[in-house]
Length: 341
Ligand code: F6P
Image: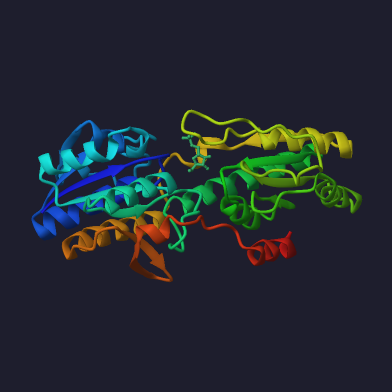
């Protein structure tokens, strides 16, 4: 079998572990040939690739980022994107393509699969917002980074009697905010799923100071927004890929809380540090299992499918189902977090 693999969209700790696993399972166990496309779909669309053998994946298990590079180029963005992809798959004699990516990448994968291409998707994102899988690799690493930052910020916040507003990643969903906030014992968690009321938030933080505490930690997901009509708020427009530009909610909240509470507040934007560096053991294992199962699915001819974690098992789910909606933080999960704040 000849298999093509690519990593597309925002990078994520664990991508290299998937690539390594695909190569090991395919080359060693099945005697397949594997090629890796450079910079995501761009590599497939421009036929830019290299052969992957055991040497090329040696030592990458613990390395962050992706040895293949990534981009946000999507076949659907080009008028002849799907046709071009189909042509290159035929020219290269590929029997399977394994795209590793998040929401946008998997939608593109589904489009190509519906166009008849032999696709087996692997989900990745630190945001953990892909439905159909209990967890995506990268999430555990990101939560660990954010939790460590929150722990560290507590001591400096206490020294200076400040409010720290810590903005974490999460374009559409608040999973990183929820988990890191719970793990570090934050005093308020603000997520996109629940537009916030600035007066309620001010009251929560204010009560803490009234109770004699010296500091407060607020965790906010970058995509969080105020409840319409509750405060002045300017959205950030969209970027070249149609993604919403963030308004800088961490800064906005720090300014508002300082003004309303008369307490010093500082914004801390964790940004891409949450995506960089070495994956946790959990993410390495999940990524490795996804790679292994993607190769197996390709050998069974199960195309148009995605590897997914259900409980402790890896299962295959249709790409169409997995891309139909995002996995948001349910109210019940958010409410659990409130009781421990
Ligand atoms: O998809 C993961 C994510 O980390 C989002 O939380 C974030 O909004 C986005 O990627 C930012 O990615 P980039 O700056 O690479 O476009």
